[in-house]
Figure 1 (cartoon, one colour):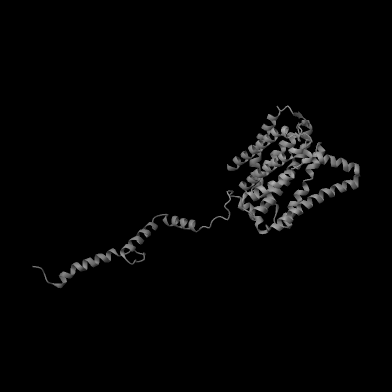
Figure 2: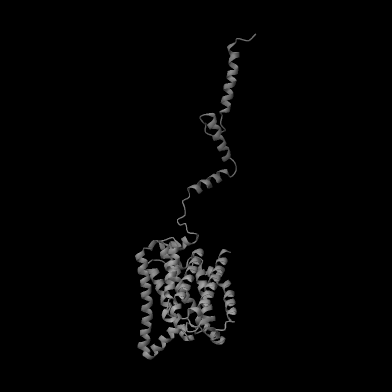
Length: 365
């Protein structure tokens, strides 16, 4: 017979209630939930967070979702830091005024120096100096031509300091000297290889005796470096930074300075119909040098590329009548004949692309 004791019937109910209470209990330190299903989900999340390293992973994932997009989408990771010093004073008018002031300072210094020569030595000496500057066909003439780039260096530095309130180091970028050496040293064997293979050209003849070249090197090499530094500071330094600080696309900061660089190498009076190809070659060089500058975040690789190229073109194998005063060998060609110059310009373009690829490979290591 079943017991009719109320206490006996209440016992199972009490056990079920106790079971529900037990299932809804929470581990110490955890917040109670409303509803068993929500409680289980929350317990599962808290259990995952309690595992070693889980909280750190969640924090990193959250930070990754909250992290803002980079300021620039350019493929050159180090370019933004190189452009940063120019951003504070990168107005178009300020940059244009700076470029005009650099050109004015340069021409004022050159014309002032020639005027001083005329005043001190007379018209005969002035005429001789002008002829030397026109061709650079002697060792002294070449040194004179290279010296004229000193005002360009000073003009860029003065405008950068006074108009933009920044220093030479901001034009060079961090680690410029280190990257210069990293790129320049491996390029020297390529320079020697080009000189060796050019020895079989029937249009090539010996020009400057080795002893004469060696005797002039202590003067010529520093001046040659100053010449390439002047051009790099202006085109891949000042102009690239000022334009890049305003327009992020490579067509702006890479191509515009390179186009101006090529235009300044356009000399139809000297090269006739071939002048446009010389200018295009210079523009190609400017784009490659700008690419190296953007990849490295400094001017070091561009300086190395330019220095290696000019050592080859000015001191080893020169073009007759064009800065060949110290060239060890000289190519005797009609620079006005596009047919005669086409293969040489193509080989020069190929050589500079090889130099550029070698520099890029070196920067990756």
